[in-house]
Length: 338
Image (cartoon, rainbow, N blue to C red; front, side):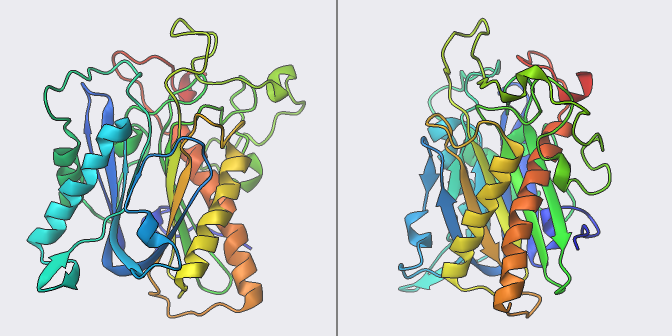
């Protein structure tokens, strides 16, 4: 039923490009999704500790129907500055909603907590995220790397480095759906301490190792472990987590349907991370519908789209951790070393 797009990236959805920028010393960065034309957008928060900018306008009952970009950033609340840098790039290109003779770029943003990850956060008076946002927007392209890049640069999971992941799916209807995730949860993406990913049933080919599930579930599979619990950093779930993501399609959707798409994509969090949506996670999904396929979905086809949203998101989350690479000062190892 499902196959990947040609890149197996969110940019298989026509009308989108992705840019990344990071600071290795900081162990943090920014990822931006740029819309070639304004895209119908929605969002859903299910984590207990979100950090956001310009999300209220995405609710179906509010006036703005489309956005020009969305931003995923490290840096906790400091990272919300990244959207200003993306706005600057768009303003230079005269892109935005016309209001009273001015063009205002609409750039919602979400952040994850990567302050306590071994990076040097002594940045002085102002955090660097505005400039990182500008650099990420300038670098936007249809091809981009995964793993320890952009908003995934300083990401951590329970026991492993996190990262930036992406995946795509082409449905029988001809619609394409893509996911992008900065994976930094309190929970684990692997079954216990094994190399097997929770999202294994949804893997296409060997995109994150091809290992499937273990022959027998390990004893620690059901154990609730959280990032930093039992480590030298502390005995409590200090520092927070968060997986922030984008689900996108080239189908034609209303604003309400885009919100439903964001809700459905959270199923991928549940399939890929244990536990997820905790009080210490700020889990959020943005949804974008470019409409480039020109396809309006029937009720039955919409069910397929929402099912694919969860599966594609689960794959993107796993691919982000699978692709992580080691760096000096890391607190946790990468998946490939397990």
